[in-house]
Length: 378
Ligand code: 13P
Ligand code: SF4
Image 1 (cartoon, protein in one colour):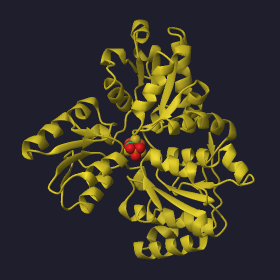
Image 2 (cartoon, rainbow, N blue to C red):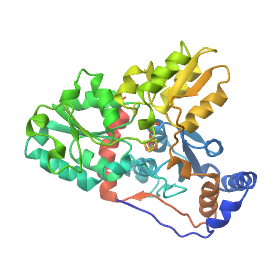
Image 3 (cartoon, protein in one colour):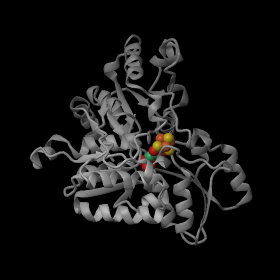
């Protein structure tokens, strides 16, 4: 469980009516005041004006690594979503780092507390524990490695740490599954069924060996005992509503209309789309792939809208399309705007920090076990 402190000196409401120009100037003033003690991290799905304010931008893996390695800063303002800020708090304040700083914590701030992740919300710790108990009646849970996607609450990461498992991101999911299978015969993967399935299919595990666990089913997640006993990977029934919009028909339409086009997708996309794509990877890999492509390359990209639009703008020498006629953005990432950023920075600089994310000690301890494995496995 994470706790938050809200002791606002400046109220949020007035910031919402300010023009961007003024917000940018005031953000700069607060940054100047805080100096190198402040680190602003930005995930690639953030709006352009927010990403422009970040000291460092990245995918989930790189942002975690940056929070873990950083030496100088004493406050991280995380322009991303809740699970990312929790992860930054756990890694930046791990025991050896706290000891190096004589116990001084790095404060991690999420500018808008409503910036969650709908996929992470699809798996609650009580549901995971209940599933594990039910599974123990039909299979040997000592032979299951729990693997949680980083898009999950810290309580799930702690569960995984306690049960000999690992956290993965979209950029090391294959390595994490290899790690898991080197130790035990079965994996339980949550909360994203698509990342789990797409990764395991690449390891010659068949769809039949991947039953889906429905947390709302009456019994055994809607599976038979035999389904679970014959399983290699038990997939949690969770998904990302942003990546779920991409369909095989969209791939076909782009290929027909734009001969030679390449399809580049995030592995949170459904199997049909993932398998039809030419390339796939984390947001960081998507960016690198486009950057490395020769002028004149044509892409239809299946990931969040803000990132695709930014790539379009930054690479006019290439032809870039959003891989769906329906525009779909991550509504929770979008909650972070200049008003929230300015409000949180001015409160921080003024000595009344708001929206601090602090994971409790016990949860942080076990989450760290699983996160350190994630950082070792690439
Ligand atoms: P990346 O780790 O690829 O940046 O993905 C994070 C995410 O939330 C994708 O929806
Ligand atoms: Fe969560 Fe999907 Fe948004 Fe990523 S894009 S933060 S998985 S809701």
